Amino acid sequence: MKNTSKSPSARGGFGSKIGFVLAAAGSAVGLGNIWRFPYLAAKYGGGIFLLIYIIFAITFGFTLMLTEIAIGRRTGKSVIGAYKAVDKRFSFLGILAAVIPALILPYYCVIGGWVLKYMTVFVTGGGEEASKATFASASDPEAKLSFFAHFIGLLEQPTIFFIIFVLLTSVAVFFGVEKGIEKVSKLLMPVLLILIIGIAVYTLTLDGAGDGLKYYLLPDFNGFTASKFFKTIAAACGQLFYSMSIAMGIMVTYGSYMRKEDSLESSVRQIEVFDTLVAILAGLIIVPAVFVFSGGNKSAINAGPGLMFDTLPKVFADMPAGQFIGAAFFILVTLAALTSSISLMETVVAVVIEKFKLSRTVSCVIVIGITLVLGMLSVLGYSVCSDFTIFKKQMLDFFDYITNNLMMPVLALLTCILIGYVVKTKYVEEEVMLGEKRFRSKLLYSVMIKFICPACMIMILLTATKI
Image (cartoon, rainbow, N blue to C red; front, top):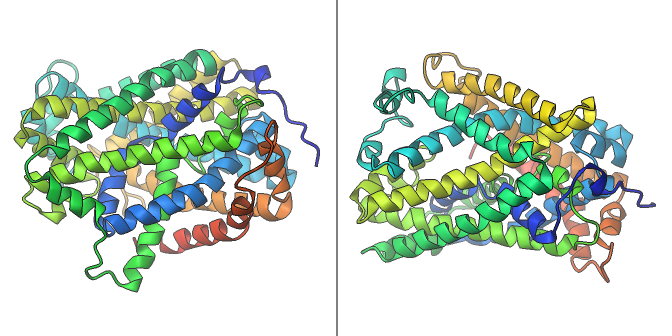
């Protein structure tokens, strides 16, 4: 099969390999790493989960990320055009890959607005107030908004922070790939890494942190049945979607901006190392700290979504230099959320530009408008419209469920079938071999894309509602 891809330079692209790696890593490093990963690790056996996750990252995650980036770079198109170029019979996958980020971006920006709110409060010295917040756990709308209602001036509602977060996201996208996304990534990602290492080191110096570290890193086989082992595998596999921006159309889009002379295989390895490192470091911050200040209460660590917005502010309030550490932590999380939301918005904007032949400026304005409208459904779902649910889920939870539990595994499964059995693995292997002497992981890739990855996707779909 002849490789006739369009040069990324014709539609803009990354100016360097490090720019691409940092931008893609910035997309992968988000709330899934810093928020979701630590409590899943604590819930599913500590070191057991970490070991399984690392194995999946270097096999399953590598395979799917390499596939998507290769498709993007070979076709030089946005997700809709890319899948159509691979095989016209699978054009519908491009539509699915475009819908997923369009649905995720609005509610992700809502959560990003919550993080931005907490960052603002901690930076301005209101850490003690944040520790008394009931936003994430209260059962009635008035209580949920009580924390925000005490903030000064016009910034009284989560709506304002949601809008600010959307606008911050759009700045990098507005300036394009090299001048916007690449420059922002080169600035934010080193800062993010310095912050997370610094906070992790400080956390580990706390009295009693060693017990929390053991709880996080050492395998816990107590009550670890075959059923729980199966669920741990499914949880670790599913976490890769959150942690590595797989099956969201993002890596296809970023791949379309990647230079032909840059090594695809080594770039993916660098992205996954960066991403996994941040996830593990996030656990080193959160698990030992919560363990220490909750008196070893495992339910505090397994607080799920309430961990960041309820539990951690209380931990920072009791921690020495907690005001400073809390501010640094929420700056870290805000940066991680921004780099991910930028990639989501760029994916949607790229589709609008290509599909409707519009300028980047006009496309950005359209996507911002759609994001604000859809995002308000999630904002209001946690306030005045909290009684309105779909399948007993509030709007944000509903959008999260259909994208992460259903649409993304389906997209990944069908992509595996497309590459493994329809156009064959040679389609990706040819792109990887551009400028390379050999494809080091060729055998691993072939086995994973044909057999292991599809099996994992089916397992996720079957167990999504049970984990």
